[in-house]
Length: 283
Ligand SMILES: [Zn+2]
Ligand SMILES: [Zn+2]
Image (cartoon, rainbow, N blue to C red; front, side):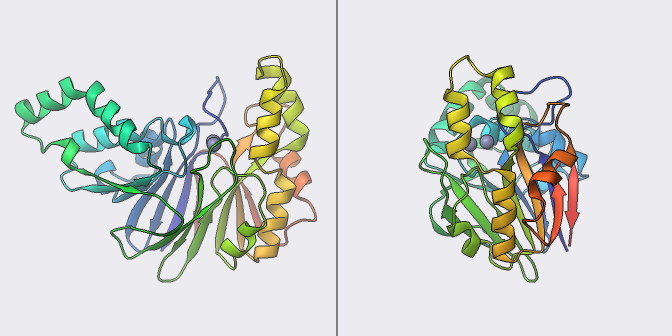
């Protein structure tokens, strides 16, 4: 059984009334429970899928933009108070070591208290932190995961992930501009979860939330992928299902599912899913 839940599908860290949540995914494959990225809302998202937090075995963080790891520490801390007793492998860029140092320092009062008062194991000993780099990823499970550096300036340490189980393969683009190497990386996958931007919506977005100069628009255009490009990549890679996530814009009522489908038209001949929070794709 393979099941991917898109827990949060908006691109970027800001949330507003009516908007979806930042990026996180729950992948259940061959009996393993994996979380990919931990944007705000990930804990609620996981339990919303009926999965207990202490079931999580592996967490992979694709890059250190806050919309992908702001809730990493809180997720693990909450799993701990929900009964976590065995180590969880966390794989991500080098900066995560500093993140955990700071997180544990900020919560030391509480963590020490619960160890003493409730007899819990030390949370700091339950995090098995590994470095994410190109190539094969340590998973501690039967799943094979490989990482490919993508293109997400100004961040260098940003990766796409391919997860291979006994039967299925799933690819996550991570945050990236459209890159030709994604075609080979995603070749014949059952599902490609690709980030996407609605070209027609970018100007409207920048006018609404930008800071008045053109830096936001420039960032979006050189670091992210127009929906039509995601469609062409999925088609060339011969994937079965293309799921769009990290949607930009995501909370402008002027732009609907029909706009996304219109930009994809004629690009991809497989099944398309336009992500929304809590959407489950089963194989
Ligand atoms: Zn992002
Ligand atoms: Zn990013």
